[in-house]
Length: 221
Ligand code: 0O2
Image (cartoon, rainbow, N blue to C red; front, side, top):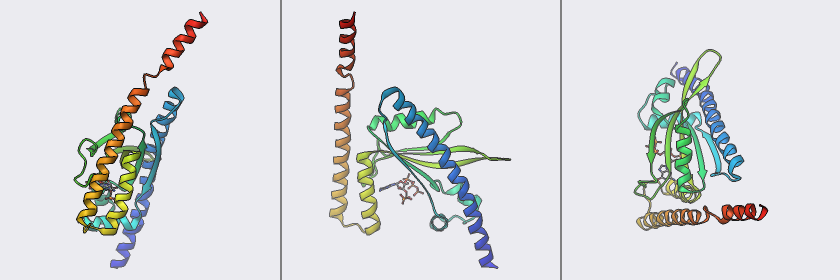
């Protein structure tokens, strides 16, 4: 009977997972529309790439056990914010806030929490802008408000985080001190790179495009 209960829960969680995929789809559409609209009006996009992932039933149950929550649909939905995850890689640091602001402005999207690890990096050097949002998913007879975790990063932040993630998982909590300090140093380098690219962009942005446009205009007059 205990096994039957566990099986029922697994099935319910698997069913619940479908809702989270719908939530991902809704947010992905929003991000894609922002990207395409921006590309249309500016010929480039501040969004480099977008990936999404849905936690597996096993990881949902494992995380529930880890954080001491009952592995029931209601408790899992209330306690685990990253069942649905979207990672957006943007070009410049300012673009991270642009993406976040554009989403925050949308009346159907509720921002639950913002963790700004860009303004305040984690002690190991991790930087990213994290938003937990709730998006409505309209079903035939109900509306479900689905929690989605968004990680918004520059390419430098993503480069660092993906390598750190691999090393962290390899070493778990026993990362040798020299490696941890190398990684923290590399995170500072990545932050400097972002800053320098931002400065470059600021120098290029008021480009002579307008000047040459004016020149063409006045030449044509
Ligand atoms: P995975 O394998 O990427 O899913 P939470 O642990 O999510 O319940 P927390 O710690 O308050 O709650 O959330 P936070 O700080 O917003 O971090 C959540 C996610 O951000 C992590 O998910 C990672 O994806 C990423 N992250 C946070 N800190 C680090 C870090 O130091 N290094 C790297 N590489 N990624 C980080 P998971 O579930 O831990 O991992």
